[in-house]
Length: 198
Ligand SMILES: Nc1nc2c(ncn2[C@@H]2O[C@H](COP(=O)(O)OP(=O)(O)OP(=O)(O)O)[C@@H](O)[C@H]2O)c(=O)[nH]1
Ligand SMILES: [Zn+2]
Image (cartoon, rainbow, N blue to C red; front, side, top):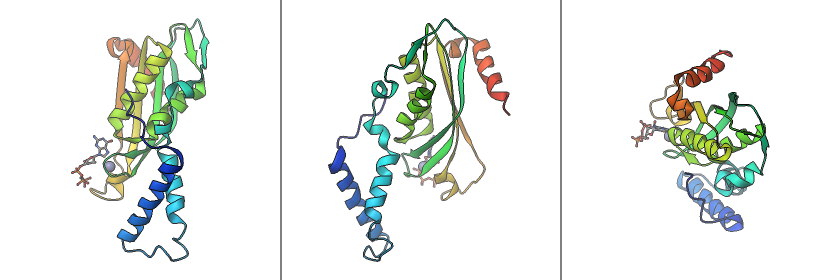
């Protein structure tokens, strides 16, 4: 379901990243010894480690058993979860919002864990379609829900800062599982709840 974790961890990973950033800075023709840049490989390595920290996380550790018994079988929607990811083609950010809904079957997931699970997968190299599906499949597996719907709306820096240079296009992707796929009324409820805020 999720991409394999990075093979290297800890100090080895950080040192490798630092060396590579130093090479990249030199390769673009910059002077690594000038004061403004001398500490940049270390900072960039630290930043990149943060931006890809999803590879170091597991779903079980993030959920931390925060599943609570509930009689409700009504839709739970967590809307407008901020999303920061990196496109796997250009290593440039894509930024937007993720909306996650599910129908519980006896247990609900701790609210913050929904947002944390979004980050587990967003903080990796991704394309938006796979990210959307990975989040949906994980929420389904963790909650044993009757159905899950995930929508991501995002803008891709690789389309804005370079390439085709379109500033206003938004990519919208959805993943509908279980009753969200089979029941029109469930999908309609999800979409109408989302539209309340528009
Ligand atoms: N489907 C999808 N495509 C993406 C995503 N992020 C980036 N891309 C696209 O990946 C494609 C890579 O195309 P290539 O022709 O190999 O690369 P490129 O020469 O840099 O392409 P341009 O961006 O058109 O300049 C581009 O069309 C990007 O817009 C994503 O999340 N989903
Ligand atoms: Zn890209």
